[in-house]
Image (cartoon, rainbow over all chains, first blue to last red):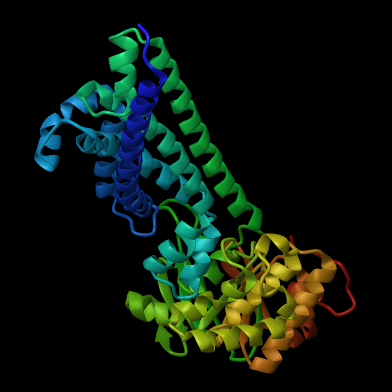
Length: 221
Length: 248
């Protein structure tokens, strides 16, 4: 079966738009939830700045639960929640819910690890000059960990592109959906190959952009 | 004046105490040295003076106020009166020199204009006016410690705690940093408490000193007293003329 190149281009454009929409919206929510959660995980450790060992254990367990489920399972298991939050389980907006929930525990751990890498002496210096925990978070932890956080966001974006492709399974649209409908169900190799090419370009651009940002920051420091 | 009364610190039950019933007083305007080998408890003692380390028992009186009895907010206010400098400098690598020195002023909610003039003044004092825009990674060790000293002085503290501030520096740089500390002490009247394992540091700038071993004070007194006392081991080690002797 042959498809007109014009049609393929049209399909690709729509699907790429849907993928970008899902990835960027999910990335926004992932950072909004994952960043404060990662900070909380870090400061609530037993030897942390604001020790809450019990909360820390509960959070850790919930995050590990989120990370231990394969994304396809999560995608289907979360259908009721998606319906509750978005009103529908179909389409790109609906897919943002499971994608975000699949990604933020991962990102929270990345944040926690990035903050753990910050030299403890710098935290101590701020405390010694009379700073409180807010000063430590906003003057030391987040700015000092910024290169690591940006690298983590890059990693998360690439993972989100992967997640968004699986959203095709539940009718989420995007490039994964295109690959399933044309490449898998209709044996249309042209569309399949084009999808792969676009995905590779997408991932490469995100990675190069992220690496560049991290490098320009690290260069200054 | 800093008065330490019966200070003890045990990190874990069953372990020997890091500090064992330490009492001392530090006069205003002095440069006070705490000397000891590593593991003697000097770092713990210094870190108790601004309560970075909470003692197991005993009191720390800062101009009469017992630090161990203060609320968190009051403790933070007291800490603004105590500058601290570190062996590892502990500068923020995300900020340039100017903004590093400004941190304590930001914490103390000093207005932007006042911060600017104060930081300029301090960079002038430590001789780094031309490095205001540089980042810490672009500085030498001695320059980093000068930034650390400027930062410690920013909030016009009455006290400076120095945690092995020259131990990571070469001998010439050490000398210049010690000179700077002495200048600050003389010009601004800031009391300096320093810990070190190097006798030369004590000899070069301290007015009085204690030696610490296994968490206890072994000897204490003014440098003049110690040097004049023939029975004092510390005094003999600190005797003028003796070069390059190390305690550690």
